[in-house]
Length: 88
Length: 127
Image 1 (cartoon, helix red, strand yellow):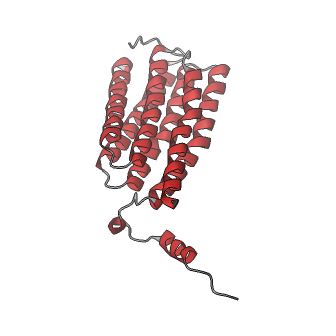
Image 2 (cartoon, one colour; image 1 turned 180 degrees about the vertical axis):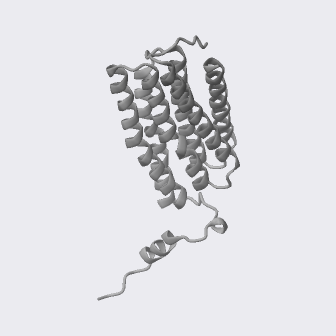
Image 3 (cartoon, chains in turn blue, brown; image 1 turned 45 degrees about the horizontal axis):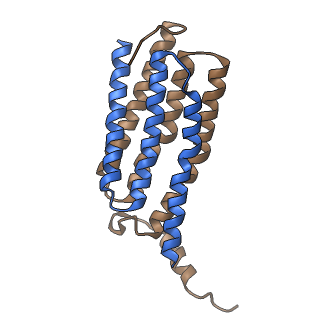
């Protein structure tokens, strides 16, 4: 029962990640792509968390910390680049 | 992929699975919003929900599944970093979206930013 529910949760996170990838592909502006990439990172963190919860294995926690720390870099750099372009 | 092993107690296991489902539903809702909403600011609004709350709920579920002090410490770090960085990222993205026409003006009811922007553009009157 728990295993099936966790599998369902994994599939739902997979669908969410797929939607983010579709938005990255079609997104009309680069900002849309960056926002979608952020959502993809959050989905990845959640998915790794589900894997750890299912296997009762905390090996991947440092990966989670690294993802949570560095997800900001892409968004902020692209946002600043776009804002600077607008000023020119 | 999934090798289910019983955790500390059945009640905590059930609670953890419920929390995981909450995060999954939230993530799916964010994905639907990301695909369906018409402009960048609305997509940002939809996408920002699972980035903090979803990760928080997943980390809580992980602590319930494998209750130990190192797990609690590392998941707290994840949550703290996520809470520190995601608001900054969303703020920067929203600011850039407003300045690069990332919002559909016809869909907004009240744009308080427009007054300030036009006031900043005009030369200030001499005192």
